[in-house]
Image (cartoon, rainbow, N blue to C red):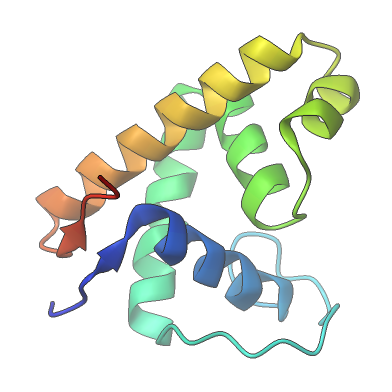
Length: 113
């Protein structure tokens, strides 16, 4: 694959794509934003998030709430009844896991630093 972007940008685009009624939840469209990600890459991310959920369901939930529902770590912590620090740790570890998984599948990702 020939995508060069950061993992945060990639997950943000997946969130927009997912809100359009595609992906893990197959819900009805909920916004007017248009995702700049192609379906093949979005489905690859969707599969990686589903796989993450089989190992770490809370981490998957934090990823989905952050990127799909656009919730802050504070809002996520309140919703999942955990501390904000724990929510932030789960988000960071989930993003790192997804980045490694996607890179192992050949997705080229720039580091944010």
